[in-house]
Amino acid sequence: MKLIFYLSLVLFSFFTFGDQAISVTDYQIENICKKEKMKSNCIKKLKEKRFNLQKGNLIEIPLIKYKGK
Image (cartoon, rainbow, N blue to C red):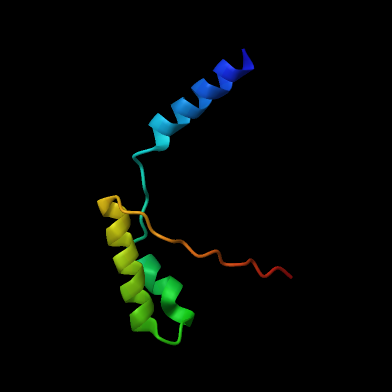
């Protein structure tokens, strides 16, 4: 019974959220790249990744560690 429940939950979430990908806007890209030394390269790479994501290609997303207090 649990197996059927988990399987249906996974399939439901896959079909609900599978086709939706929220990409960042140009303004958000500029805010992300504010602190970078090579601002133009950062913007170019992020726009390229956004384009690839919209086309449906896989992209690599680096993890940024949270610096707490």
